[in-house]
Length: 335
Image (cartoon, rainbow, N blue to C red):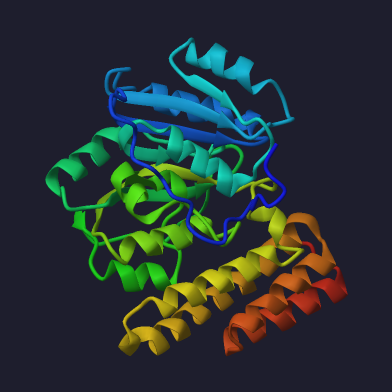
């Protein structure tokens, strides 16, 4: 059991120690944290195994935070056939600490934390490997990505991460303003985690915070092909945190951290742009949530949070439009 003072959300970056001398190292560690994502895990595993580099180059391991939605170990054995390792946490530690365990257990030079409900397309690992070869100064690398639903169908088209293959330009300021990257698209060198420490401070936007911490110190290399898929469904950490406002509070906390660590001369304009971005996102999200579950309380909370980020003509328009939908019981297409 964790000690009584155990922090599920660390207040400072947990230290990632270098691997002990004599540890058998590999090039890749694909670490798959899971908690109640068994319905998606088979696709996740197959997407990795279909481009497996072999045990001499690639570690593949599922790190289970005591899921209770099925026999994860049996699924890993059935799909992985002994190729995929399985580690069960002694107690449930939460997503942030589970990612920390993934990093500590990784023996590869490159660490891909691939959530158990996401997946990658053919060519992902070759593309990232070539990026690190071509741009050895990079502390992390990524491909482009898309949001998909339960069936793997596109939900919406996100803005491209960059303009061309290579080191991302003005990346620190850009990633401080908005979340351009979801976890399946990003790979981080173990040495970068050893330098900066693991995820901390927030639960719902912990990846965005980490991408900013990396961008403040290291170049990030980019491959423009869409080779990663982020699953948007009702049970993921972000989706369940709208009503209790945890998502809003964590995003705002991360946003303020990001802005504070930019050069002073760009902070004001960056905060304004970030608030405008999230006001737009939450204003639209309120309508999507209404049409998803018709929960009046939740939709209004999200719409009001849009106004907390920034009161502008767009967020006000969508707020009053939502109130009208609720008042009339409108349940047609979103917006």
